[in-house]
Image 1 (tube, one colour):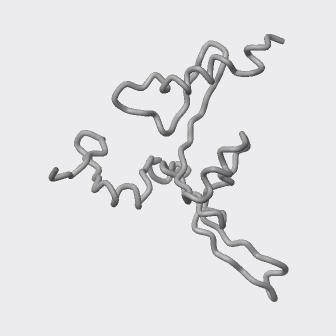
Image 2 (cartoon, helix red, strand yellow):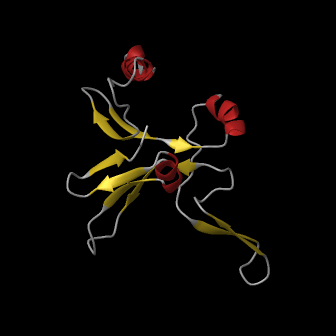
Length: 134
């Protein structure tokens, strides 16, 4: 097997050199290359978790879906609701919603990010825009 392929040299170079981004940086989606199929997912996480999370190459974001964790049996033990399926404070930046054909699937920017940057969705142009007065 080719050593460069094994160590993903081409993809690492693409990421380290800005993801072919000029003005905009891709935060979600896939890129099919000659040899690779890359999927990008971006997450928000607590600042105190960044350094530890960057020390490894493990996917730590879990399922990123709301859910309840039951510690013990359902009838007698503790039930904890996790907004994004984890207690680590990880949150997806982009949320893809699938309605199994009942309604049109959608892609959304997480609420906190939209509120922080005062973003809104322009349905006529199908674009997320900033409502900044600066």
